[in-house]
Image (cartoon, rainbow, N blue to C red; front, side, top):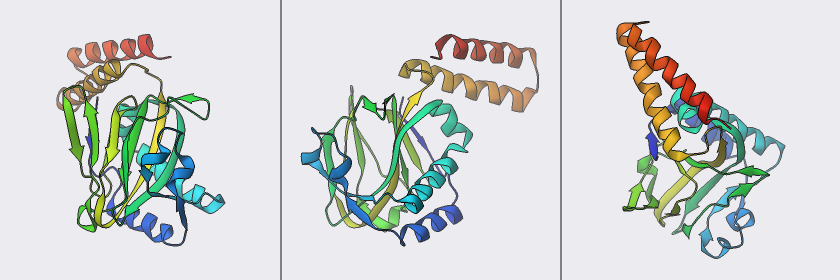
Amino acid sequence: MIIHLQQVIDKPTIDVINEKLAQHTFTDGKLSAGAGAKSVKNNQQLSVDQKAQGLVDFTLQRMLRNPWVEAALRPKTIARSMINRYQNEQSYGVHVDDALMNQARTDISFTLSLSALDEYQGGALTIDEHSGERSWRLDAGDVLIYPSHFLHQVEPVTAGQRTALVGWCQSWVRDAQQRALLFDMQQAVMHEFETEGRSEQYLLLSKSYQNLLRMWMD
């Protein structure tokens, strides 16, 4: 399940985050890459000190406030999160994310754009699905959520600067197909409630949704 959610953080908040980012320094992104990815990783990441980590945490929590982000992730643990940027033809070649980060299994990866589309060129996030490659260029406040097991890459940024919060999550629901079904069911439950209230159909859908969640959580 790959989900593109738009405007999960509003523009005024994005502006505040970027203003604070301008006060911090960035280091070589290779420092956080696994052994197999160092040779293809060419970006920068926010240097982590107490203030910088506070900004990462603030951005992450603002993203998680969105109920559909929460529904897509069902986060048990955020294994790692960081802010990175690309400029001057920087890119991140084809790789797969590490299965284990900070003693947590990585089920889901996410990229939250902090840059508007007119602030950079190139920089598409390309994911190699079983049916072929698909690419996304994200606007400021947009997040792409996808299973961590896919090969993926960030295409070269040919102009401007692409800044994003990236992270990895261990989900309460391990299986991607089960997460997709629950995501669809939650939308159906909410739609029924918003249009028909506490109808018999709503109660049946809600019961089935909660019991599937109970069955599949680990």
